[in-house]
Length: 356
Ligand SMILES: Cc1cc2nc3c(=O)[nH]c(=O)nc-3n(C[C@H](O)[C@H](O)[C@H](O)COP(=O)(O)OP(=O)(O)OC[C@H]3O[C@@H](n4cnc5c(N)ncnc54)[C@H](O)[C@@H]3O)c2cc1C
Image (cartoon, rainbow, N blue to C red; front, side, top):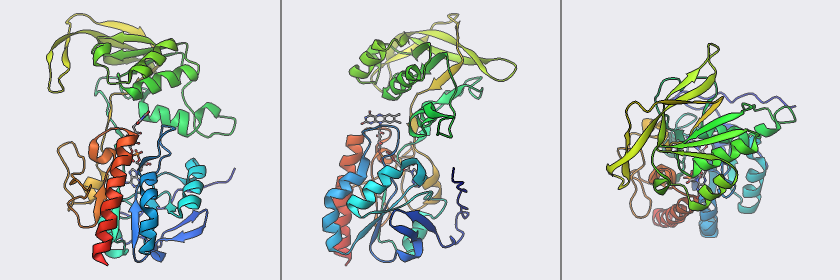
C-alpha cells in the first residue's frame, strides 16, 4: 500500500509555505489562485449517503458564476483518499478544484485567504462536527465512542473491512448501549447490529413521544431488534482494571414540567440505580460547532452556541464571507444546508457582480 505522510501545517498567522495538493486535474498550487475565486469548506463525504450539501446548490448557479470568470475552489480537511470518487465526480462535472488536507483556520485563516491570497468571496460550510459528551465518570474508558467516531470508522473508513483492505479498526462488540434519541442514535444502534453485536440497547431519558428521531427510524430500529430503554440515563460508565468498559450504571427518570424546548423535563428517581453489562457505549447526544473558525476569525460574529450569525442572504458580518448549513443552523438536515447553500450562492453572485 502507498505510504502517505501527513501534510505539515503552519501555525496560525505564519505565512503558509506554497501549498500543493494532488487533484485529479494535476498538482494544484494555492498561489495559482488569484482573482475571482470562491472558497467552500465542505464536501458531502460525511456519514450519510444522502449528504450532498451545499456543493450541489452552488452547482445550480455555477454557470452564472463562470460567466464572470469566477471559479470555485473547495477546501476540505478530509483526505482525498477517503472520498476520491466524490472528489473526481465534482471536479469532472462542475470543474471545481478541490484541495484536501486543508484545515481552514490552521493551514490558512479566512482573513489570510482573502487579504493575502486574493480570494474574493468565501462560503463557510464547516458543519457542526464537534460531538457532545455527558461528562460522566468513566467516559474515557476504552470502548466508549462518540457516535461521530463510531460511524466515521464504521462507514466512511470502512472498518467493517479491517484487515481485508481497510486500515481503520473498530471494536468487535457483543453488548452495546447507544445513549440518545435522535436520528444519529438510531444510525449508530443499527450500525452496531450490522457490525455483529448480539445485544444493542438504546438509552433515552425521556419517552418515545419526545424522541427527536424520525418515526420511520424508530420503527426500523425496533424491527432490527434494538431494545429501547426509555426514561433511563447513564450515571457513570463502569470499567475493569485494564481500562475497558464493562457496563453502565443507570438511573430511572419520570417526566416533570415542560422545559425551554417545550418537552417535558426528565426528573431523576432517587435510589433507582441499576447496572447494564456492556462492552461498548456510544454517546449520541448531539454535536456542536467546532470552535476553530471562531477562534481564528475575530471579525466574524457568532451566537452564544458558537454558530455563525448571518442575514437573510446568508451573509456574515465579514465583507464577502457567507455561511450556511449546520455551522449556522446548529445540527440540522441536508435539505436545510442545501437551501442555505442556494441562498448564499445567489448572494455571492450578486456581491461579485457589484464588486466588478
Ligand atoms: C450520523 C449523522 C446522520 C445524519 N443523518 C441525516 C439524515 O439522514 N438526513 C439529513 O437530512 N441529515 C442527516 N444528518 C445531518 C446532516 O448530515 C447535516 O445537517 C448536513 O451534513 C450539514 O451540512 P453542512 O454542509 O453544513 O456540513 P457537513 O456536511 O458536516 O460538511 C462540513 C464539511 O466541512 C469540513 N470541515 C470542517 N471544518 C473544516 C475546516 N476548518 N476546514 C476545512 N474543512 C472543514 C468537514 O470535514 C466536512 O466535510 C446526519 C448527521 C449525522 C452526524
